[in-house]
Image (cartoon, rainbow, N blue to C red):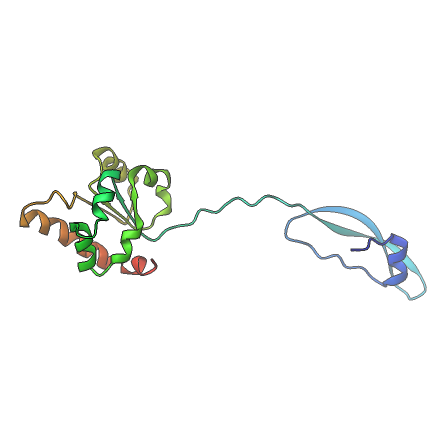
Length: 172
C-alpha cells in the first residue's frame, strides 16, 4: 500500500473517512477536507491502528465420551468383548472410538456434554459425583458381571441413558 502525505490527501480527495477495524487503538491525526470547493480546512480524524493479538486456542466441546481404566479399555475394544456386544445391541458402535482413559478424562473433564463411566476407580467415581455433571452414568465393569440380575441392573439404566442422549450420540 502506498502511503500518502497529508497534503496529497487534500489534493486527491474532498473528504476522508477512516473506518474502524476489529481491534483498534485510536490516534488523532490531522487531515484536510473541504467545506466549500475553494476553501480547504483542517479537521481532526481518527486513524485505526491494527493490534495483532495471538489467538488463544479454543477448547472444543465433545458430545460424548466413555471413561474407563487403561486396563479395561484394551479389553473392551476387543471384537468379542461384552462391551462391544452391548454397544452393537444398542446400535451405537461408533461410540467405541470415544473410549478414553481416566487420566485423559480428568485433564479435560469440562469439555464433555455426555459422560458414560465404566469400571472406573473409586477415586474417579467420587470425583465424578462431586462434579455434579448433569449428564453422567457410572456403570460397573461389564466384564465382571456374572449374574443375570447384575447384567439387567447395568443394562436398563444404560439403555435409558443412551435413549435420552441420542441427539448427542448422533453427532459422533
